[in-house]
Image 1 (cartoon, helix red, strand yellow):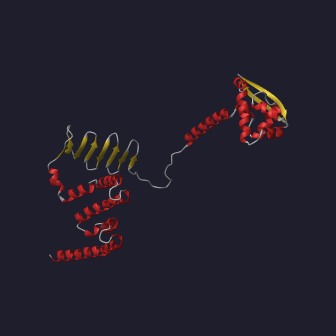
Image 2 (spheres, one colour):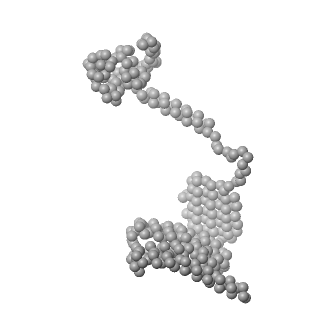
Image 3 (cartoon, rainbow, N blue to C red):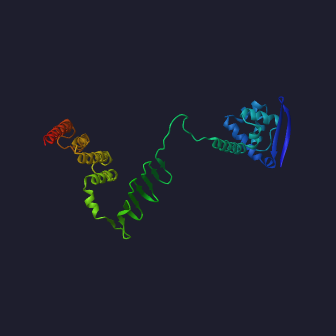
Length: 316
């Protein structure tokens, strides 16, 4: 039940207040609210009384719920505190609820009006690889390669040639063009095709094997173990393990392309200098910088032997 009270005209304005049945039982809440508003504006009872034109005792009775301010005083209090009469009498809870409801409505309307971006008119677009991060990492490449990684299902890789690699709770399985090359038994034993050992040493497949070997994962595990263990300067030096990653892959590339200049020799020199400095070997930091002079020498030797090789090849 809601009662509407016309409080008449005050300063030329018609004041109308709607009060429900519950509002009549809020004298104590209203008194506390008047007290909080006064303290919020750093006013004493006497200062507030002077602003309104009443006695300090009257203000004290309002705040103890022993009396209620009349209409004129309510309007003056609302103006002093910068709030509406509804806020003064009913509190901010109702307004907050209304505000939240309005915000939800606005959010819903905004969501309905949200437009998914599309391409620019006149620009040609081509289909890219499909990538999803829902429940893991999923990549479906245009060329047919697929990679799916998740904690629940494990790792599943399939290339365009038909080779499938599945690593999960049941073990490791490799299927190459319908031929099962690797599988895991119920006892946990990993079985592989005996011919795989011979295939690995053929030039093309061997290079593919070593390039796909997860050396970076081994280096990362070593980095974390070194850091957490605290041995040999701990985290301060463990990061040097990560420098072995470019060393490994550049070494594989250099061996199979037979081009020594492809090896990341400067990285190896940097590692040597850092280790010499930390462990104070061969003069430590003071003398260790000399190893950098070997970098131009290394590439000169690579060029020198390459010329000899090409010369001998042309004379054959």
